[in-house]
Image (cartoon, rainbow, N blue to C red; front, top):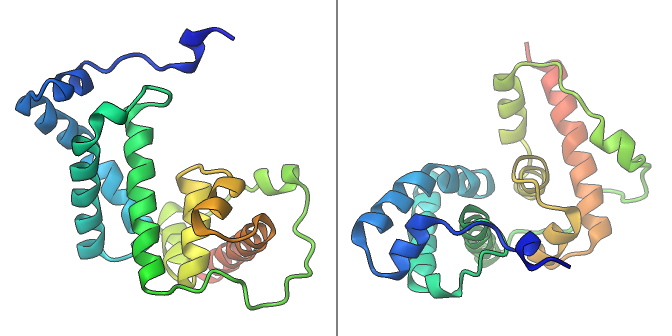
Length: 183
């Protein structure tokens, strides 16, 4: 396998950060702070907590920037730190990740799951997602919005892949049902 296929291109600002350039730190923070805050908010649903998590994530990233190897983009590496920190905070709050409803349901094929198209407007969808129970909302957002694979979500949350699939399917159904009832 070609080594260059595995490594993303060098980011000049990241390299300047490695050299201790303060302007580069500022540039990177300005480039990624808002998307990282959005990712944390989708998990935590609390602005103050999300802001704290993002600050901690940047501190951790900048403190260990020499560990960044370009096997992914810097943004993906930083997002993973934010997601892990956000989920850790939820764990401290003892969020229940197991679906307590009946789990013997037909969740469809991968094609059926990936072919969902919402015909509603964005505000209705956001309302419907915000109305989900916390564990449903987190899994739905990690899968749909942040694009993590269900296996990755299962590993992050320390639950089974089947549990993630079931919770995701239920969350998706609740979002669709809610969107269809919002006037």
